[in-house]
Length: 359
Ligand code: PMP
Image 1 (cartoon, rainbow, N blue to C red):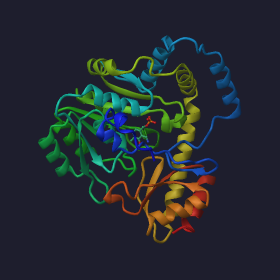
Image 2 (cartoon, protein in one colour; image 1 turned 180 degrees about the vertical axis):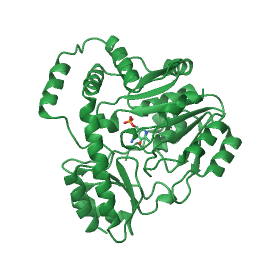
Image 3 (tube, rainbow, N blue to C red; image 1 turned 45 degrees about the vertical axis):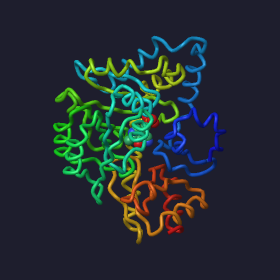
Image 4 (cartoon, protein in one colour; image 1 turned 30 degrees about the vertical axis):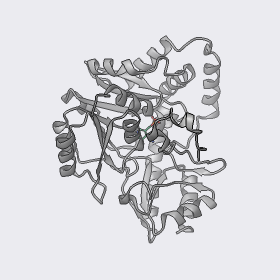
């Protein structure tokens, strides 16, 4: 909780900001941490040492320079950016989401996204003085095509976010529905593929069909959540405009070097993602065997479950040292839902045990 501001300072801070909640990060020291879709694996000690040497050699006295351009190009190669398209970097995709809102700041502009979804889409709109248009998913967490098309027609949004897969529901959408939404969009459509390492499909090879679709990715779920590197791919002329709102030197030299190192060892991270996909399969099987727990399918490194009493289950799991995310108050469609990040075999076993005894 923040203390109340004295009146002469309260006058200076936007009323809507004073009414907002800060993005909450739960304390997790010493817990089985399954609340934020992080990759549970650290680098091997040998790679960690090698990275340490690389980071030790980085000049910290200079602003980030050419090395960031090297990273940008390495990511463009890694992500196979098509001809005529370009890639820009953000300090996590969170920063890209903020920059997109900043670039689209015209009077009356709006941002539309299905909900429940990633909270930053709405937050970035609000902070930029744009209207946020949330469109409810169906009760089985599919895109409500009619509602989406009606809201697009009515509000003519500057940006539509489609998380593919979605957070916290972990599913991909019907591709034909996405296509009709893209066709109907009067502004930009951002396909947010934060969970791409765990997904069975990607939108990547379809972005060239349109001039108004952007693809957003992050290294966070790949295994570098602490490094904060996100990237946005789109038509070169459009990226050049959005890039103008990017704060100078937004990528730290240490983040940049760590990301370059990780790309050189992409096979290690790909193997970790493959292992987490296998663990996800096992977790889903075990969840299906639990009475009173409904688990939805997942194309991400998380599983959404519904339990008889989410608050009780969350507190019980926490008391047993397992931290998950209680999303039950986020949206009426998520009543009694918890979001479980897929961890190591050990993490998942502890989580299941804690869940079972906390129902
Ligand atoms: N998009 C989605 C759908 C997410 O769930 C998240 C984070 N959980 C992000 C973007 C932001 O990722 P980051 O800022 O770590 O790149």
